[in-house]
Amino acid sequence: MITLPGLVNTHDHLRSLLPMTRRADTAGLAEMIKAGQEAGAAATAADYRALTALAAARMALSGVTTVVDHVYPLHDPDMLAAVAAGHADVGIRARLAYGIVRTEDVARAEAAAQDIKNIYLAPVSIRQTGVEGYRAAVQAADRTGLCLYTHVAETADEVRNCAAEHGKRPVELLHDLGFLRPGTVLVHCVYLSEREIELLAETGTAVAYCPTNHLKLAKGFAPITKLRAAGVRVGLGIDGMTDLFTEMRQAVYAQGQAAGRPGALTSEEAFLMATEEGAAAVQADTRADMVTLRPSVAMRPLVDPLQAVVHRAHGTQVVDVRIDGEFVVRGGRLARADEEELGERAWQVTRDLATRTGRRFP
Image 1 (cartoon, rainbow, N blue to C red):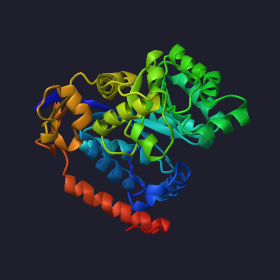
Image 2: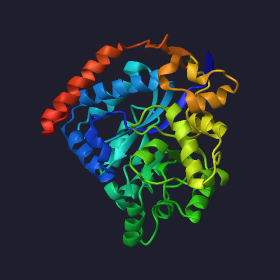
Image 3: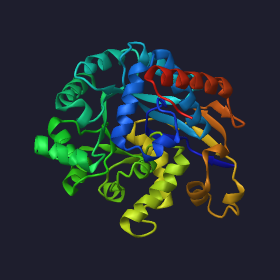
């Protein structure tokens, strides 16, 4: 066996509102956002719990012990509690990022923080939330001490549109609003200027890097090596993709491709981003988390275990997972929930959502 620290997924949306079909192969970001909004509007709190529980199971079974779950829309007041219950069904540690779409969502997020610990105030994006929503989130963070979280600088169009409308690039705009600070996490950061990288370093703002999502949706290459060289803390996010083992090697390969040289980001750096650096970015205490992995034939002869884990391991090889010292996965099976039952519930929700939204899938 290989023993690892708990893996930390710094960005995800643990509700697969859109089933994975071949139609998604050619869908761009804007199309996926629109379809997701339609499905989310038709969803219920019970739907959110079922889908969250299945995704939490997928996380735990692949060695993830901590996840930041960015949740929106939240049109039903019971939805956030349902998401938290979905995490608890499996036993995974989750930090909820309350998705702020409208300014009035900030007050709801503050109220939710009375019952659920460590909530992020999380405007969805500049294009979806608007500047007033960000300003309200910053004011709430100043009042409550809650941390901030958002998607930003995800596409070239976003940067151009922000500059045209506000006279500033997105990260510069967030800095002027007071959004950048210790405890803040910015997701994606694909298109950054040198000055924006300096601002992130100066303010102690962290970044969640989602390499496979960026490759799938042809977003570009985030300047991760420059960010880390500047002292910015960077964690890895799965963001709807497969597992953190995949994200580690994709980070290595994508950064090598962007720099034009292999090893621009090393295996050790990618491993740290998936473990202790990611934990520090989202302020998670993972000291009593442990994952055991059964080496595959592809990993042998096991000369360099770290290199083999980063480049050859898969989540399906995980055997045991402990979170805060307690088994959540044992012998490759969930310790607190039944996988088949979770899968069946999620299938029923997926079928029902398709009916409600008039969608068909094979």
